[in-house]
Structures are given as structure tokens and as C-alpha cells.
Image 1 (spheres, one colour):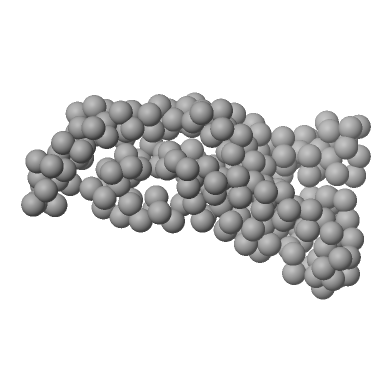
Image 2 (cartoon, one colour; image 1 turned 180 degrees about the horizontal axis):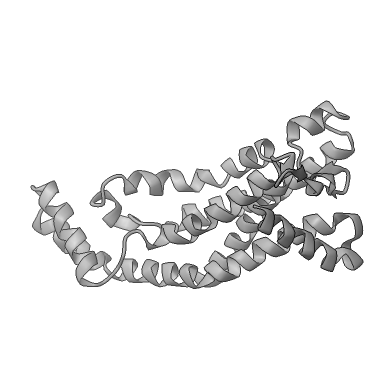
Length: 236
């Protein structure tokens, strides 16, 4: 974790001439963007998989008719069709899964009072009036909802709500690039439920930002915003 802390510190030093006291927060945003760039090929592959699964819908409809009285045989036939066409029903999850290590690194880094036996200097950095190692409850305890730190969180919540609403509208209009989209979801165990719940998960980001350290919340906000823009470009 000390190596990761050094990376954040170095990025903050580079950005300090532009962002001043908020350089560490800008470094986290930049780090998130770099992670998303690394994951972007997987996102493009997920988009191709989505389009390929959409193209399979007429054949899946035929299988539904053929195996209407045998759900288990229908499920096996759909899975075999995905295998035959080399369409992975799990490809849509890979971009999110690959980001988890980076998120947890930030979470632990800004939740630790010391690193390698020394005080964690990163905890002294702020996003305007809100320390990067604090949570929303700390902001509420120090100044209340409309205090200096509380206003920072209200601004972040507004951004999250706007992005979540955009994702919700897009998800309701067309299934997200996740396994089990369309008719196939009912034949891939459990994935139809995921597809139905997915439009609402964007709003869970509000809860995440409220309960994790602000630095980890910045990662979530940046990544979620990136995802919304990326989906708009890849799934148009």
C-alpha cells in the first residue's frame, strides 16, 4: 500500500501548480481515469458482446418455440448457442470486476491512520473544506448538512443523482450490457433478476459515496460518470 500511497502523492505533487490544495483530490480523479482507460478494451468487448447477444435474439426466439414445454432443455440450448457463437454471457461484468482492486486500495489507503509505521500524510489533504479521509457523517458532525464540508458532499450527491438518473433512463430504454439481457436472461440462471434490478443500482452509488472515505467516493463518482459517457458512446 505504501507504493500506492507514493503514486498518489507524486500525482498530487504534479497537479499542485494547477489545483493547489485540492491537488490530491485531482490526483484521485486522474488515477481513476487512468484505470478506466486500462479497462476500456474490456468495455469495448462488452459492447461487442451486447450487440452479438442482440443479434442472437431471433434464434433464441426459435429455441423458445421449439422447447416451450421443457425449460431446462431451453436453458441448456441457449447456453450452447452462446458457446457456439463465442458470446460470453459474463463479459459485461468484467469491466466492473477489474476496477474493484483499485477501489479497495483507495478505501484502505484513506481509512488507515498510518502507512508502514508512519503517519498517513494523505489524510491531511482535502477537497475544498472536506478531508479526503472523512465520511459524510464526519461532515454532518462538523458543521452540519450546510456546513463547509457538508456543502461539498451536497455538490457530490447532486452529481451522483444526475448521473444515476441518466443511467436509469438509459437502462429502462434498453437493457444494460450485462449477461442475461433480452430473452436470454431467463435461460441464464439468476441473470434475468440482475437485469431487472440493474436500473436501480445506479442510485446505490449515493449510499456508497455517503459511507466510504471521500477519496474512495471520488473514485466511485468519477468511474460512474465515465461509465455513463462510455455507454453513451459505445451503445448508441
